[in-house]
Length: 128
Image (cartoon, rainbow, N blue to C red):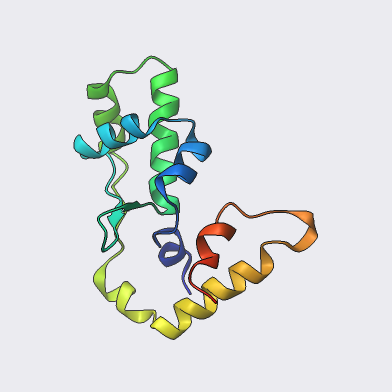
């Protein structure tokens, strides 16, 4: 599986993204409203974020810490294309069986070497 496909796979809930970035839910929704990020939605209309979304939010946060306003952030990030959604042909290349195999291996590998994975709890709901 290509790295760009993995990085664009929506895996993280709003709560996990808040912990990873240190941003509030309101801030994250605000950046979505201003089209700085585009998280995917579940059937229940919940936001699900990819690694690319988290990276972009961390870029936004670092720019805010430097004192850059929203217009400056837009200008800075316009040079870096929004990669939340990979091209459709790349998404079709990954079958459901391959995706489930990948997610299961991530879940199995999560507890190795004494390290807990942030997505372990999220992945466990897919397997019984």
